[in-house]
Image (cartoon, rainbow, N blue to C red; front, side, top):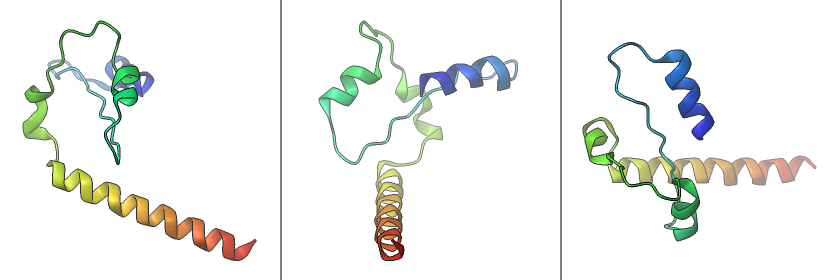
Length: 82
């Protein structure tokens, strides 16, 4: 993910834009995901700065559930054709 954030920052940002952020969407909380997603000594995380521009927790949860169901549906249909 960090590669995409850096690419956007270097190639697509306009002057005056806020720095891009990456969002990791997970179905469940995992300390391991948190540990390895952020730099080891990260001391400045300003998620609240972007809160107004992010979907609500409920909207993110619903989207994850929709995607999960779609993947399960595709998986079942793929097995029917093999």
